[in-house]
Image (cartoon, rainbow, N blue to C red; front, side):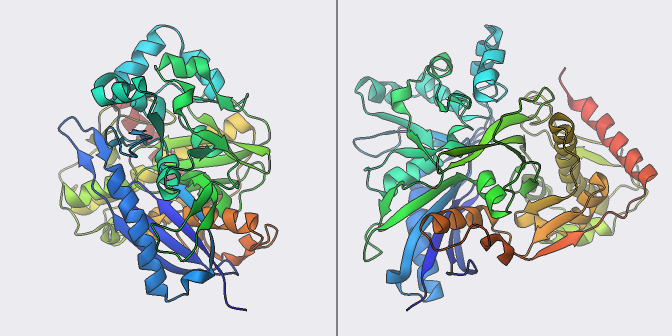
Length: 494
């Protein structure tokens, strides 16, 4: 019998990857294509959804042809996707009424402020587990409805669909036959009631959104439809998983039990802790979401999101020109003067968890005359670890769990300086898997388990890990963390 394969699509903020997995769960092929970051003078960020769809189809062709496998041997597809990014389209024509508004974009701030001013903030959080914020999808969709005439006219005609990137891809890949999302993505829109497990009509109404415009919410391992990728495959194959990228990484890391925690490092970062079958509602700046629902059983998470982590290094490279590429950051940071106390607080579009201050502005502080390129690069590296540590400490306190290890994934985990500093600041081991593609791994493993290709009890043992152990002395750790907290206090607007 010939080898069979599971295909994963990882649609992220910066590009779209296709990943090919063998029957034993090994990654045997990867191809990716970037898409444009459409940024205006206000710092608003958009994506061309049609470009992303075209890239999705093309990158599947790329990975199949590069790997040389027989297309007949692909058994199914899983999708992981950038979350909170929201868009609206005409269900008849299949055309977007506007560009997708990216999760980083805070243009819905006034909409959220108006709802909060009316006293609905606590009610929204109680239903959705999320602090009212332009970070989430609801305010982005509300902005489209209020500012794009075609959106309202399409709604008046009864043809409007609103969704996240997963529901757009499922719709397009199934040629409009399926309009579905999963529990993980729905829980990040600020429109889904995570207690009642359905779209919340009152919360949706606060944003001017009707629930009939939203996708059917399904288990993360359910059948979302079938696709042949615009006729590229000889037959249609099932799309048998959909997960938000951070949820996919949590699953791919094997964090299936209460108290297990991981961080996905990307353009931004997500820190996520599995809290089991019962939601815990935080009072300290992190949010409650759904990890996934599989076979009718829901798991919840605490999560903190950071707007700028990998994007900080992109800024260091592209805007400041301090280093030729992010790959150089680790070596340059390690060469910095150890006595330098420069801090960078990257509040370029405000601060996310645990501060949730969309008006905060970025700052570099603590510089001396001897501060140079290496010290600024190190400050950029360290701010990533500080932000993540802030969230993990809150989660430990809220959940009552003494966190023993941190599992990590994403491109920046190749950076040994960053990983060692993360371990030092947290004073716990940091475990880096041999593969960085954990979002795609989670989507592929979920689909493969659903299709009977993988065994849930053993498949996660296939991934080997490198562990970074803390070596920093406690007085230095306390001094550094204290300096970071002082720096953050300088940028907060309240």
